[in-house]
Length: 620
Image 1: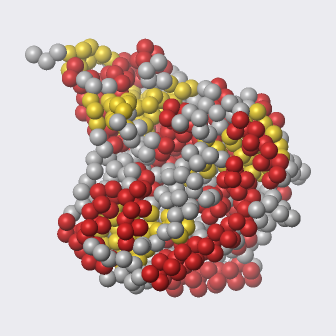
Image 2: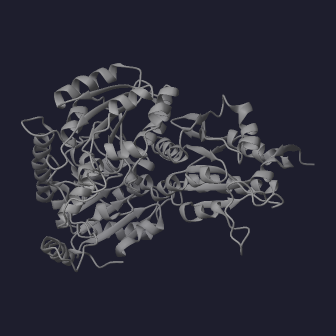
Image 3: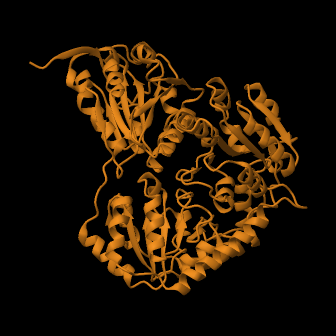
């Protein structure tokens, strides 16, 4: 007879998570690194009770905002290359609703995150309860159903026995390279406390492994034949290269066949900046070097990328007659734009594709041209990031930090102008050290994601730093995890680059022929007297060390001091909203423009932007 253990639903969930392990670098470790939680009536009575006895083994970090908790979980998962995750628990109602944006971010970026969220009572006896949304014709439909659109796995636990099936299914989704994404368990408040006799086998320690799918031999052979015929091949290296742990295989493959490599935003730090085959970042916020090579390539091997529009220049970055090979663990991504698919793990597929190419090497003149383009781009970047007799800029701040940080320090940024500036100007010092969140381009990720990354980094590389680049707009949206980092002694170095509003959108506004309106604080008609925020004082109020600097030289001094400190430091520098933007390296990007307008400049820009549409590939 099977031995059983009588537990509540909440206790069973926690006990299961405690016993799931993975091997990383030869060390057995718990897959779930703990959780982020804000308790309320929907989760504290039962889930809180279950988490308390294991608080040392499964640490629960107290959040300040549910959205930022989800961002922190994403930053943690990115650091661990999707091999570990954190859970987030929120109460029924607005607490859970606050996780929607974070879940969408994890979904867009294909990141594992488990959400354990309160729900109304299954019995409905006390309905309507506090914070319940009532749908008169569908009483089973509630707020938690909104997560169906932004999760890879969704379930409402209506009986304690369900977790026997749901927990392994949720974990399998989060660990699956092709289907990886957030999982959501809706936990009615009464069901959380209901007990059941669970089979003890459910809680036996289990060692999991990430599946490495081998490519189909026929797909591999066809891809090899196309590559062997290539005169101007290029490799587009995406974030999937890092998740597969295939950076070394990518480099070896490129070197063996002399094929230039360009990186996506998610794929930044697949190769060192100094590698002669690293031709730079490609796309809308890329480099002249990578875009020049991509535009002339006759065969494009896209490895581990979902080919987002910032990578493809809204599908103008590649020649219309170029052959695309989609090497990806996900079938959906491998087949985009009529690509020749190679569905499989990047590490295994690149290892197999090399021998299939035989002694093929890209023509020497093609590789030499790519290197020459990269040399010219490096010269531009060196000048762009150098301090000089000009206004402060993002690029200058990036250059200062790049010169002073250590190779294994981690760089985190997200929305606004900084993703473009970091992507274009950052010179990679070590593999996998750059997190530019542009899958969802989500304001507010920066500091929260940095905190989550630092929690992971402090365990694996405690002597290194997590460095956050954030604009004033994102800072004002979500900054409370400065306080979290101080409370938990997870040091961050946060650079707040203040350009007086949403300057990059103001730039887009101007570039589409419009006057500045409602983006820079100075251009808001509803603001009678604009004034600057005291970011230094605000950061100090949350317990951080903080300093305001006037120029890159002072920034260098402040950053050096922050490196030497064991406490979170916020460094504030004003940058110009109009001058100092990186003005090269841009591919075309499709944006909606007004076909009818009273403004001559708007009509002129509309015609100019539409004229570029002829370059778009027509694949589907």
